[in-house]
Structure formats: C-alpha cells, structure tokens
Image 1 (cartoon, rainbow, N blue to C red):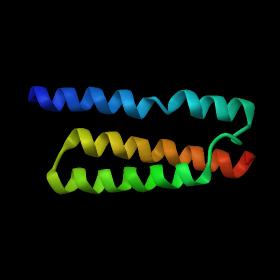
Image 2: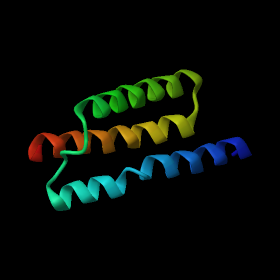
Image 3: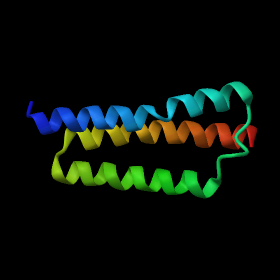
Length: 84
C-alpha cells in the first residue's frame, strides 16, 4: 500500500467517524431539531457522488470512506425522520 493510500484511509476514517458522536447524541436525546433536511440531503448526495467518483478512479480510500459515510448519513436521516 502506497503512502498516499494510507493518508487517504486515515483522512477517510477521521472525517467519516466524526459523525458518530452526532448519531449517538441524536439517538440518546431523541432530538434532531438542529439537523436540517437540506444539510442531510446535500450530505448524502455528496457522499454518493464521492463514492461513484472513487469507483471510477478505483480509489479504495474514497470508496470505503464514502460507503461508511452513506451508512452514517442514512442513520441520521432515519433518526431525524423518527424523532423529527
């Protein structure tokens, strides 16, 4: 594995897992009033496009980070829908 791939994986882990505290807080408090639907939809669109881009250029760090991020954003959308 090349150094740029390692850096990409570390960057992907950091930015992707930055969503975990927000998911946990939203789940515990059952409050998502501060999360706008527009932000969530832009975020999921961006993650989907980055994922497609990663596939097109065969970049494992981009693919993995955005696949996990899609899962996290979908979780936030579910929590927002459920607890509004």
